[in-house]
Picture 1 (cartoon, rainbow, N blue to C red):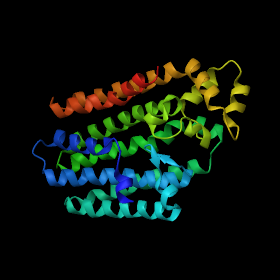
Picture 2 (cartoon, rainbow, N blue to C red):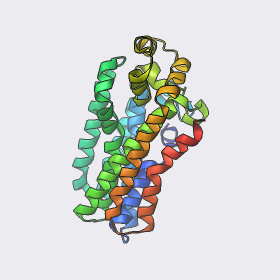
Picture 3 (cartoon, one colour):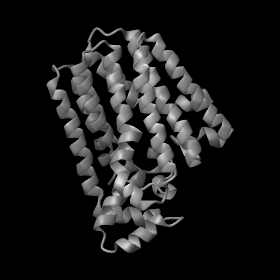
Length: 289
């Protein structure tokens, strides 16, 4: 079960930890950096395990979810175990004082998930809170991964703050691109049925922009808030009215993320962080015809 929970991920968050560590200090201790990177991925896997229980999801990364295979209790308990392992790893790094920032970020992520779970199909809530939702869900954790890397490496506060700001903006770009793929990606690419967010009553940026621009907003609103929304019809409306705008917004966040790094001394690790800010939106563009 543990092997299933850890397989198949993109390892984005560990990469952020490792690159940020070597940006902050090229002589950073490798064992501590790798322990922090592992902790970041375990937090991510734990949140996915818990999310799948909350959403009653059947597929994750193209395979049955833990709760589908082994049951709800097993999914929750494995997520709890992974979080316990995180703090053991952070202790091993010798930087356990950073644990409080990790705890605070995880707490915010959990509170956001609780809030969202209570507001499914509440279109007004999602219109007012979409930016906050993706900041709490994705961007804040990517930010803390960057900051954790700098802290583990013994970097200075200014560098850590620059990397943290980069992480927020790169995370916003990533999540908007991910929300587009949820509408247009194939199950083979995204590892779950297309339109899962819409079916669950989570209204993301592609849908929200289309709602503001579509010729008949009342009809579109009825379509997307139905208990069984017509995902294919909604996707065609999104393609017409909001696809280009979502791409522009994601790219703007990526450009802002890369610009944050211009204040740092040039290095191959800085260059790789800049490439990462654009990688997922470019992948998204390639996968949406």
